[in-house]
Amino acid sequence: MKTALIVSKTETSIKAIAQLLSSENYENIDCTISTEDAKDKISRKVYDLIIVNTPLEEENGIDFSVYCAANTKACVILMVQQEKAMEVADMVSPYGILVIQKPVNKHMFHHYLIFTQCFKERMLSVERENEKLKFKLEETKTITRAKLLLMQCLLMTEQQAHHYLEKQAMDMRTSKLEVAKQVIRTYEN
Image (cartoon, rainbow, N blue to C red; front, side, top):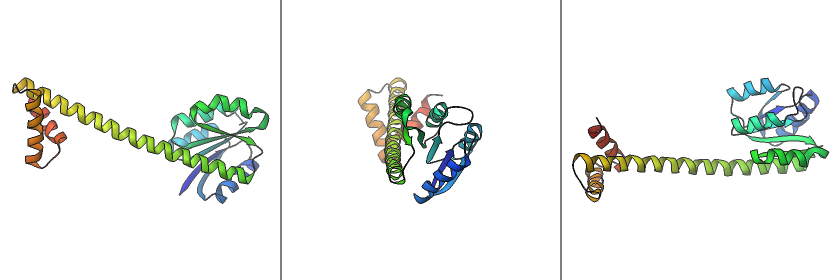
């Protein structure tokens, strides 16, 4: 189920945007006219998409859209008047915010949503890869620390320590990481 948050200062524009989103299979759509209320909603719920229709009651909407991009994993769309679109796009593009010129036609809106979904999938893919690399780095650090402890405490060479960890992992039918953690628990205390 796709979720969205609409932030706009008028109920009329909220209804129009909500209709567009409903036609794009967004089933869970929250709406508000206040950035403070929107921040509260963001803190309690995960959104796939946040649409900020400028100008807002309390501000122009640019700072709030940057806040959304920095504090959520949602795709952020900032809707602005046509004459300001290029200037605003230059300001917010570095934050990954898509700027849409008003008025918006349904056909173009559909393509914007496809683009945001593609962007989000790519971002999630990069994030998953980043997590794998972080895990691999931590694993390497732990194994290296265990080797150093074996070299210091048992006077092994690096090759002997490496062989020891591999053989223990094979004999115990566990990972080299688990053996390394056990070595650290044994010799670091």
